Image (cartoon, rainbow over all chains, first blue to last red; front, top):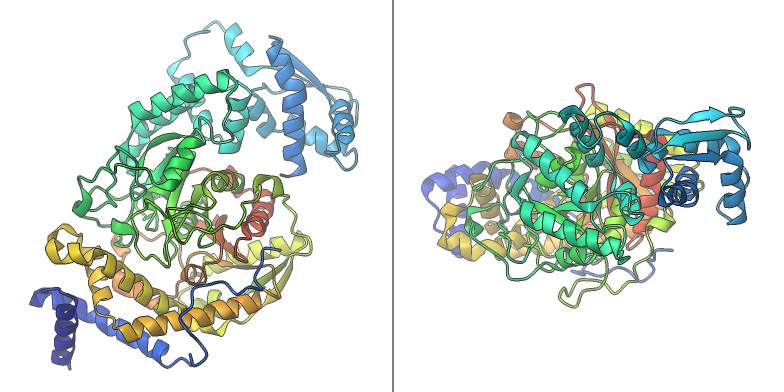
Length: 63
Length: 572
């Protein structure tokens, strides 16, 4: 299991252009695992209606 | 402004200043004359003599006007109550030690000056009663005396500050008054670009970086005549934590063994320690409001787009906000007034008009509907400190007693706010810092490097889902804010922890009470609402509709004036 996580971190970091040492990867494992748990909440959310948008809805006003 | 503020200002302008300009050493003020004058000017709805009398003999008025304790004649209340004051300067001049204050007197004078608010100092400067040079010297001496312990400054600009103060003084004397920040000593988080002055983001990566241009906010503060005392400590690149690759970390003025919160650590510490009158912080997940809460000051994250981000080292483009950190809500309004507005250099800066913030601070919350998402922000089982909960509940009860209506609201998508903010912030941060992470990783501090590496491990799918969750959050907040005027909650989950107790991994498990307002872009303020048994400050957070900073500040101002926590200062 831990080997898979190490491989995943190595692969993802290499894709990003980083050359992490074994020690650095080891240090990242608990953070990676914690974020992975938190991501499950995000990926299980019902976001069917949602787009990637960055504007305020027009009905919002300061009044 | 409260009625008491109006009374003080009216008396200052119509009684104290004329007496002083005539060279008199004393001034006599009759309550009836003040009330009649204000009634005629439409400044007082009805002659309220108890309020007039109370405001005229109060410590705040005496300090503002530099008057000694008055001798009262006539009845205690009513139009014939009359106060006879001696000007503080006249008393000093008639003392046998005139011209040479003792060390103790000089130190008291300096501390008095440093504990004035921006608003109070501005009134004194504009009326020629306070010298920007004397004020700036007082702050520089205080920095020299206590900042070795607080460590809030990474660069002190003594020579430049004094030069700016001399210019401000000359301009005021010539009648060229630029506004409420003219001659006011402020400081900036060390990620605001300052032309010719090193700006590092508190990272070794940028150790020798000297910008050739001011950030838009820096330029606007300069145009407003403020005096820049220096650059302030921060978490490395606004993210790392209290250990950085460059400079010491700021300490909490209420207890130096405790953190200030981040990332605007020095901005919070310097205002709380009275080593500057106001500062600018930046806020990507709570970095203005968190340190404000933990340091017992006021901090505003304005609406996304309200204040230009040009010339501010980014952490996460879509979540970064710039805003003021000050001792009082009025001071926050004054700083926001100067820095807000469109900026062609920042594509995200809004064209929305900027209202006159100070004039709209009425301190009235009658009929205001305050939404409380208790399911997320008031849950001790998810880590909320019980003393914080108690203080915030008491503050909300106070607001209710002042005439607001409390309403519980549900915002289910808050469940995703923590992780979506983490994904968006760290992904964007890694994208910005990626080249330096590849070429010089050793120059990043351990804490920030570990966090940026996490940003490299999220996938595009994670990032897109986080942005979609953000859209849902914005929609639900929009629906909620159709029914309520503001949303109130604690600013921080816990008060300031000890340095040795900082644990970045444990922090990942805690909810963030500030990040939802970065994702929605809504304006949110932190205002002090009490102290723990150990004497550490607690903050109340109030958020509102986009570009409605006025309502947000007004609610905070009403509470501030009612609760009076701003009267308490840390002992250093």
